[in-house]
Image 1 (cartoon, rainbow, N blue to C red):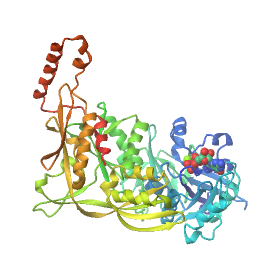
Image 2 (image 1 turned 120 degrees about the vertical axis):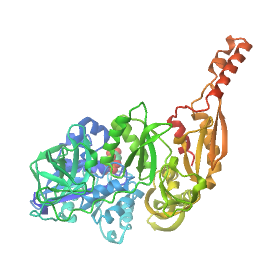
Image 3 (image 1 turned 180 degrees about the vertical axis):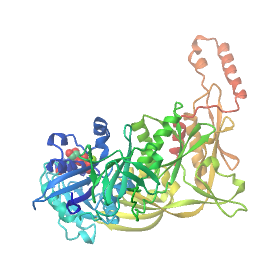
Image 4 (image 1 turned 30 degrees about the vertical axis):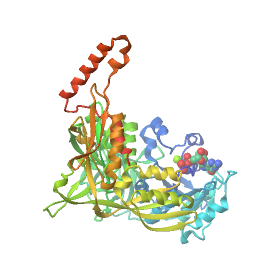
Length: 597
Ligand code: GDP
Ligand code: MG
């Protein structure tokens, strides 16, 4: 297809506003899939992915559209990946698009995620086609929704959004016609050396690493000798193709086209999203700058359960391939053995990675308490030490001062929740920078210590706003932090994996809560064990974990009183010999730390 007849675009929307339904409708109206297939919501996530294997996972699909002007167009719909709470995920697909359909549910109006996604699309320089959905619904308030869209930005003030029902198909034809007019055709030179953007990738158990590419210049041929410029990886591609939506092999992909490359690579380290795929024989002179590797802000240890270290290693490597903002490095803990120190964009990202390890690889991992990277300035030393693992936090006597990372946070929320949101930010040491109204929403900027959002800030925000707020965070700078390391001692032995760093003012309350939680989460032994939270060499809080006394207590009735007492005495004798705590740490113990803030 010649580039002038190609359009690459994404659909952006708040969750449940009808993105998948519209995508299906576009596929069926262009006969990309039969109506029967589209019943199954082809672009929709996990269940279908499992039933159809990796092919549906593309979330990118090529449609051929016979337009009213008599010409045929290639419409590449690059679906934004499932989790809209990750703006960086959305960014990846927007980087391969020239336009975005901004879809708004007429029964709900503009929502926080609509605003956040629209802002991202704007930053990526995309042409925007506003569309109001669900006009068939009795609850639709079309006029209000249109007014809200127009109020988003001066550039939208005079546009008339298209009005559709993705469900019935009403108005969708007009969307198909508008796509070719509103969105620009890709530009690029067909005769220049091959230059293709790797905008996503995945690991297929049979085919190895598959790269999703958009061709900027030149031509990609099946079986060609390629190279990935930033990674300096050479390969001969095994297959190239397009998403129909199944992966369908083709011989060539030309300027503006979107498709996949079976790289033949097995090692996930050899490919990074954002890299430039070119020709070995004739490499392009101007590769893409590459995506800024997103900076991991939150770190936690992942440890295998059931000795599955090797499985965990493989799974982590593959996940990192699909998610370039996820980092990892091997580490060994005294209490937990070999594992990985992993870096995430935030706590929510950590949760998603854990879920993916469980869902996609059947692995459950033990996760230690998350923390940020501290800059620790030692007495008599110029350069600070970077510490992202509390175990390595230097002894307080050697520390001059500590700096912690701060975030610039943008919260978009309905006006009526403003008070509750400000209260939440205040409780987390947030400094208000500014705020502005955006229709019925408020956009608030805060400066917050990253450590304060590392725990459950996002969940709390969702909960107080009933899911209507969005949070975007960016690294701002490092600034002074009055923090201390909390060490946990169980039965007089330090348990390294339980160490964490907190703001000094929060330490007394947190350690009290912690030891109380430990009382219920540390597996009991036959003898009582003291659990202590130690800060700067002094125990701040202490509790006794009661012993297991099932023999004596449960079968007591059948025994004489003296026998019972003898048994209790024997059980308590053991405690002296076990000064080292060989306790098995369960996830509950770590969750006890997580739930503290
Ligand atoms: P997504 O989360 O944006 O992908 O939203 P979905 O496409 O999954 O749609 C969310 C819900 O809205 C589903 O129950 C759809 O059936 C429903 N829906 C989508 N489009 C329409 C529409 O035009 N009219 C009505 N009444 N419901 C719709
Ligand atoms: Mg959906």
